[in-house]
Length: 134
Image (cartoon, rainbow, N blue to C red; front, side):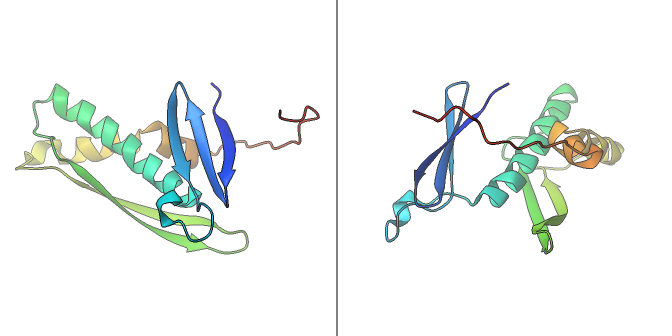
């Protein structure tokens, strides 16, 4: 799978994959309409969206009300190196969820591929391409 990330302006970038575009960072000075989430916030947001997708799938299979579900993410940062140190995700489903499903919902949420990528460790290799971008 390939995602293309292009510099837009200031420290703002646009990521494109399969025809979809996401913007992150700050645009040119003084134009607040050009600002997006910071990349670290987008990283945490992707974790919440992945958790949400897994939970919605579970809820659909078990006829549990899920329209309007919210995943609230609280995170702590660390220094040296700068990184996200911890994330707490609170899943808020509308209505009353039968207690027999509570543990299963948390287990399903924990299986999200973003969560598992973080927990299992990802290999990231960076290199400078010899082919300039045109």
